[in-house]
Length: 309
Length: 231
Image 1: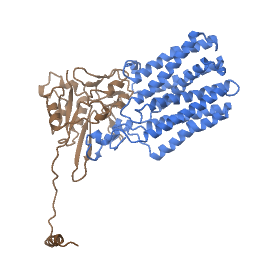
Image 2 (image 1 turned 60 degrees about the vertical axis):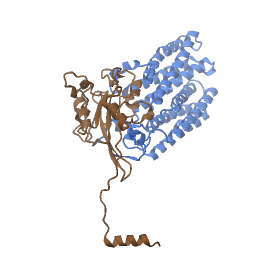
Image 3 (image 1 turned 45 degrees about the vertical axis):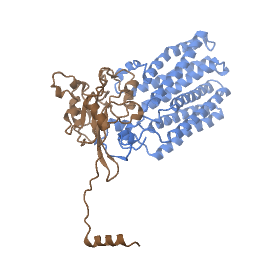
Image 4 (image 1 turned 180 degrees about the vertical axis):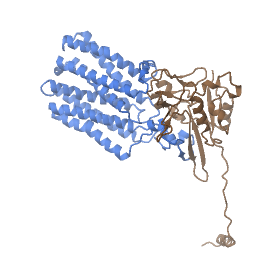
């Protein structure tokens, strides 16, 4: 699949924003000492909303006809993209109420504003889940059509959100809170495990072949002529191919940038190391998302001569 | 209620691309038109087509056959492209099963083209909306046309009559009969979209040797000797 840069930016930044928001509310309501600080809560909520907004705006850039984007709420009953849009919009008023609560009452929130926080955190996770289900519901792309896809999006969102929260906390207060540090380390480890399982899983051959695509299941089938003399929408969108050795190098870069180096940096616990860990992890997740697209092979490729997906 | 669709005969299709060209010609001025081209006379042309023909070699020589496979929308009974559409632009008509895109509602997110396994949907770069086969919905119901011409443009133009249009819900229609008698099959049925269009596999024919070498007198004698004497 052709990796559209706007979609990579959208899923990584809004994922981190939703993760940051959900974790922050959870930690604050659970009574974590470091988070009973209205400055930290305010800046956390503002940063999360900023990241989510940038992501959502970026997502409209890949639309060929954005003037009809408002119509995307119409098919809530069947379309995951529609559900994502609805929940993303529902998130805003509730999250803004929570933000207002912190602004007005500090960290000692009344139950109404606390409830807003919980609902907003839930909506954040639901929106992230809907985003992942857009990909996981496509039977045409076996690398996406798996329960590992939502697991992947949720764990990466929480991981990058935890690193953003740790960064803010370490910068605004003196030193990184040990609880946030271990939460960050745990989520990085979880993200790495999920990603490694995914990489092993997509390596196994499965799914449709050129034989089932053409209906000639008893014989060998080879493409003689693709029928077009220049690139088409189909070759641009689905024909995206990257050399195997480049993919392998990028896989190593992703594991190092997104998981290994941030883990080691977060172990140090200094504020500067935490900032660096968060930035590197976000860069690593951009590579991760790029690979998520580049390694996905749509079944239309079978009609263009691929023997299997 | 009807289930309109096409039967494509892979035995007789000669791969002339006439269906694709007739489709482009009719539909570029049809209800969803125009079907725009990008840089049509330039170095890197690209354009929107609703029908594409690909050619495969099936089997190994001498038991091989060149198969031309024209593909357009299969008007699936469980059309995933309609399920994933967020705006409601994609819809499947109850009365005849034709899958259409409302050009006024489409936002060009490409998701339906991702959900389609057959490559039937193409984004029009100029309109910014998704284009697909309409089964010539603006021809087949046109009462101003003679009855014989109320068929999709691809079917009318096919010089070998390899494309047949009809109602799969009617067991006595040409499409139902052909599918039944010739073992018409769906493409990629394992995805479960239940495509309506069927493809008739090539008939099994005897392999015809193109030429035979007549051995010389000496070679024939050698063969006889070889048959008698074992080494």
